[in-house]
Amino acid sequence: MTDETIYFPLPDRGSVTAIRSLPEGREPDCLFVYAPGAGSNVHDPFGSRLSRDLAARGLACVRFQFPYMESRRSRSDPPGILEDTWRKALETLGPSTGRLAVGGRSMGGRIASQVVAQGTKVDALALFAYPLHPPGRGDQMRDTHLPAIGVPTLFCSGTRDAFGTPDELRAASAKVPGSGLHLLEGADHGFATLKSSGMTGEDVWEEAISVLVEWLDGLPGSGSASAS
Image (cartoon, rainbow, N blue to C red; front, side, top):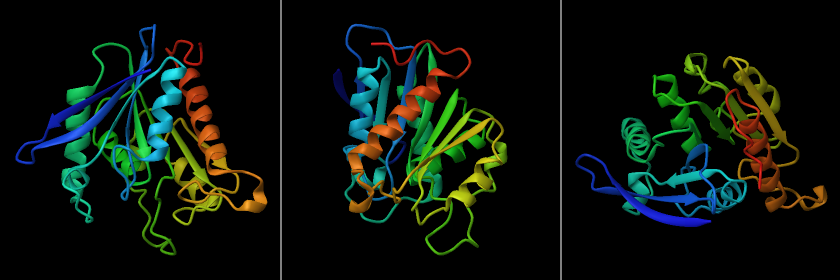
């Protein structure tokens, strides 16, 4: 795997850091662009592991952070800026050929789903720990845009996720034509597990990434994403 650090510009907001990870010895037929959750940055552990594992399977990955993390601020950017950052990342870093899949963890995936619902052209969308509602606030569902998503979509969340129960996520994913839902048994919103489960956080990461690769490999027009 080779990593390249890239800085892409945002109008009136300087530049934002991204890291491109490419497989060795082969031309990838798919690029996955990933954004982290609200409290994480371009070096978040899940995104870093995801990039490494995708490259080992012959896929390319780009991960980036949002402007507030670039400036080391604690408060998230307004929704419009988050969406503009996603669009600029795809405009700057998207592939010239091959398939383009996008997504992220928690807020990073939610904002990706919004720009896809608004018409940004991609081939697939993967949402890890989608924050369907704030914890304990099932009356504040973030699902009104989901029916407008017109690409295959994977939801992958833990069964103990306080931001969406399995039943709530089943109902939400059903709003997206051609979607799939994979539940990570015993994992919470941060993909942590209870000691009694016998699973570790890294076990959950491995399962989530394997599910993503298998799902991408099964999409129409895909090559063998899991080939070594």
